[in-house]
Amino acid sequence: MNHEEKLDYLINYLLTEGGYRDETPSALPEKKRLLRALFNVRPPKPISAEFLRIQDEYLSEVLSKKQIADAKTFSYRDGIAVWRGDITLLKADGIVNAANSRLLGCFAPCHSCIDNAIHTYAGVQLRLECDEIMKAQNFPEPTGQAKITGAYNLPSKYVLHTVGPIVFDGVTDKKRSELKSCYESCLALADEKGLKSLAFCCISTGEFRFPNDEAAKIAVDTVRSYLRRTGSKIKVIFNVFKEIDNELYLKLLR
Image (cartoon, rainbow, N blue to C red; front, side):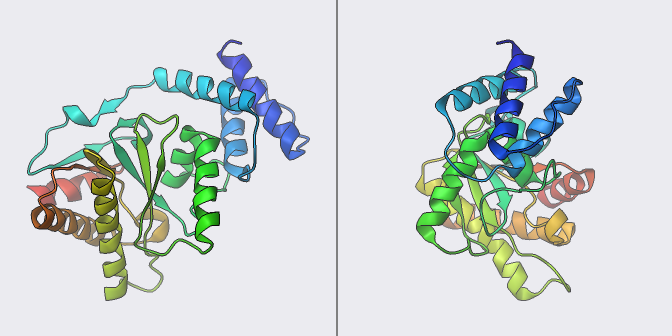
């Protein structure tokens, strides 16, 4: 199969599996969008080895056409760096996913959140592993803790999943403490597993509405404090996507 034939196979498999009547569009961009949507809505359930083989080949080919950023090449100051870019294109030992309490990824088709992007380009195995974790746990993931999974088809080795606080009517001390706990839990878990580098997204900003400036200050203060207190040698990357966050982190780290 060539690349587009693999794309068609994956779409047709998922349409048939889900009992959808949609027809595969003819334009390549629309096909890619449809595949992402089908990945997003698929519940965690068994899938064929043939599908996984073709999916992994397809996602590997997609990745090979993009520019990968290697965390080893970044410039660190006191063990910390800032990098602006797509976290699904970052080669690091671990990347942090801003998850929800179900820990199964975002089910909204083609949603722009980081949870959606990470699950899309990791492949369906990531949701399956998260489902195993949640079934064993048997209760929603608490805010401020962390879980670790494989990264599958992403350039990173692992994904750390943490649920940040949701802000409704202003930031409270409890919300600040929960956000701080997200960073501490991820760092402790990464050290426990022997990771040498860890990239944080801007946890709880965006969909969870934590103010960007205060979230950035909590992130920087918590990471600095953890590194000093524990003597950890882990390299920490603050991964930012928006210009406002890039400016905030650079200012705080000067």
